[in-house]
Length: 53
Image 1 (tube, rainbow, N blue to C red):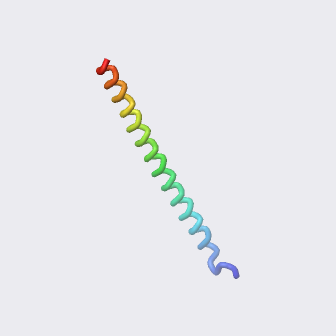
Image 2: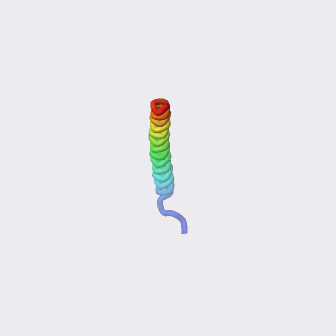
Image 3: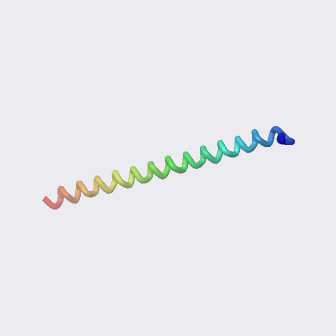
C-alpha cells in the first residue's frame, strides 16, 4: 500500500535528520566538556605533584 501523501516521508526524513544532528551536537559538546575537565584535573595533579616535592 502506498503512502497517500508522498510529502509525509520527506517530512519524516527531515525530522530524523534534525534529531540525529541534535544528538550528534549534544554528544560532541559533552565530549568537549569532559575533555576539558580531564585536562584541568591533569593540570591540577601536576601542580600538586610539584608542590609535594
